[in-house]
Image (cartoon, rainbow, N blue to C red; front, top):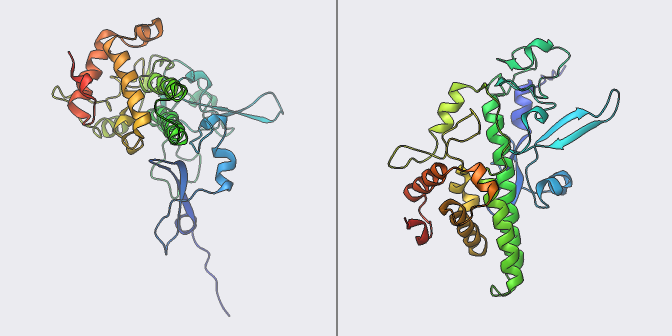
Length: 307
């Protein structure tokens, strides 16, 4: 008599799993993984049916939803999240460990979890089967970083796609120039956290995550990094996206990268001095970001060296 041994849950995950990923030039896709073959980047309609929508800016992108009932007994409602979403509206359907401070978020709404534990959940032990996961945590700091990163990657993908679509047109066409300048302004606003939702007092993330993330980026001559987390009133101590070092940014076509650098310089130098920018970025913020970029970003245009 033949005997069949069923694989464990972790073995099933290893034999038929996949990871989301982003191509430096083409946006989001997936890496199916099997035990017998190396991972290969793929993009299929089964993914794009959800991952090319208005929430991804019309390009293959990443999604981060907060999901809640719109009313008792009603259908679930999914709302896209990014760094501009107030914390009170984030993380419906998510487990969130650590503390989001004085604000009650939408996460941890599990029948098995006492309501008094939902705001400051130290660990998710006992709330799900952790087999195959790296840790029994879903750290608030990591989720805040992910919200920024998903939105930033979608914007960079859209910028690159628009530049490539416009490539057959003459670079001197004023309509193309105006279009790319407009998209670049949107990218830079997000990159500099101009409309970031303020963090409430008392946000407490995993010290291990904060240390590891902050150590992962280059530092300037004064020891500062765009990876330094703040988490007291905003995500980053120096509010400029660390994804400026990413392959997705480095491989932007010149017709896309040029307008981004020009807009970034206009804001950081103070040439753009609108109320939104004065409110979001102090003079000290702008100067610190410029100094960090000058020391750590190799392909800056020469005009960034002006004092």
